[in-house]
Image (cartoon, rainbow, N blue to C red; front, side, top):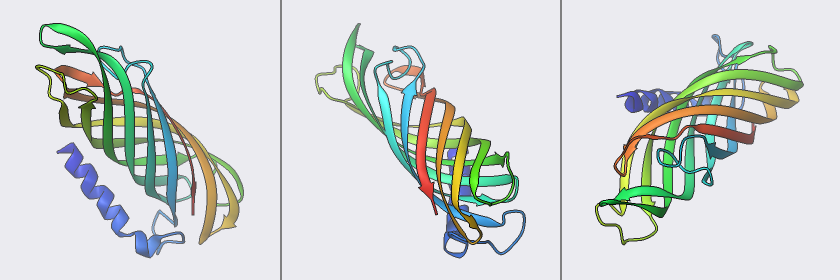
Length: 211
């Protein structure tokens, strides 16, 4: 249900993209909009038996839109993730180190608070929170598993607390251009490969540009 609600609201925001894209909106509390493109790097903080191991990292890309007012903004985006590593799994009666890859898609929806109002040139720090749903596919590199499935897909949900800074180098609506960097702490849970719960908690570093 959470995933369906997030997806529906995100699609409603993105449906307005053509009318609000890269410029000033028609009014209301959100006065301008930007398309955002970014890359993501993710590390994980859980134990190696309940989450991607400490030597596992995730890489991803994002596309989204931000609607902004002086202080409050809304972000809708979709993130794709690739995760690879090796960790112990219970396969039959024994625990075995297995190499795996994970692919995931996450629609995010959240709010940001601009710590410096307006759309003038310069650095604009902000904080925010996003909720997300996702679908993850786990695939073991070896087909020699016994009780485990060689490939499995599961839905999950979670949230991220975000802090970031954006540098505007074109200073007035409707032509807002910027680069940004973000750091996020995330929590996410799912049940997969006989691990319940399985944690996708960790730290996400993001960087990109908006126009």
